[in-house]
Amino acid sequence: MRIVLMGPPGGGKGTQATILKEQWNVPHISTGDLLRAAVRDATPLGLKAKAAMDAGELVSDDLMLGLIEERLGQSDARTGFILDGYPRNLCQAESLDQVLARIQQPVSGALLVEVDAEKIVERLAKRAQQEGRSDDNEATVRKRLAIYAEQTAPVANYYAEQGQLVRVLGEGDIDEVTQRILAAVTQAGWD
Ligand code: AP5
Image (cartoon, rainbow, N blue to C red):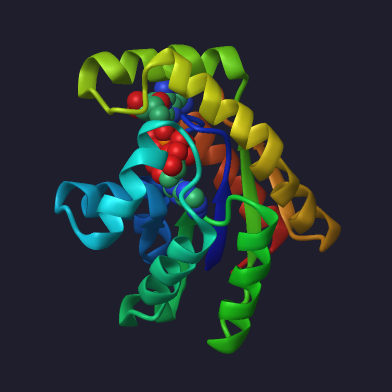
C-alpha cells in the first residue's frame, strides 16, 4: 500500500496514519514529525525550517525534496508507505511522482480527509492547551488553513485528474473515520 494521506491541518492525518500503518504494515512518513525532530535536535535542516514552521508557512520545496527522498530511500519504505504532509503543493506533487517513478513505487492513490475549518480551529485549540505545539495558536492555525486552501487543495485536484483521489469525511469519532477510510480504500481496490 502506497498512500498519500491528504487533509487540512488538524484534519486527523497523523491520528489516522498511526492506526492505518498497523493495519497495512507500512511505515507512516510524516514530514511534519520529521521536521519537528530536526528542530528539536537543532540539525541544519531544523535550523533552516523552524521560522517557516512557527509562522505556519511552508518550508522550501528543495529542503523538503531532500528530506522525502532520503526517507523514501530507507529500507522499510520498500514495502509501501503512508505519506502524511507531503506533497503540499503542485511542485512537490510533481517531484514526488519523479522520485517514485525512479524507485518504481508509484502511489496506489491519494486519500483526502475532509474536515470543516471551524471544527479544526476547535481541535487545535484543544491540542494547544494539551501539548503546546508552537504553531497551534489560533492566528497561526488560520494561516495554515489559508495556505492549505491556496497551495495544498490543488494537489487533490492533481490526483483527481489522474483518477487517483478518494475523499473521506474526517468528522465524527476517530474509529468511525478509520472505518470510512478502510471501506473507501477497499472500494477503490488499492493495494
Ligand atoms: P504538519 O505536522 O504536517 O502539520 P499539519 O498538516 O498542519 O497537520 P497536523 O499535524 O496539525 O494535523 P493532522 O492532520 O496530522 O491531525 P492530527 O491527527 O494531528 O506540518 C507542520 C508544519 O511543517 C507545516 O505548517 C510546515 O511549516 C511544515 N511542513 C510539513 N510538511 C511540509 C511540506 N511537505 N512542505 C513544506 N512544509 C512542510 O489531529 C489534530 C488534533 O485533532 C489532535 O489533537 C487529535 O487528537 C485530534 N483529532 C484527530 N482526529 C479527531 C477526530 N476524529 N475527532 C476529534 N478530534 C480528533
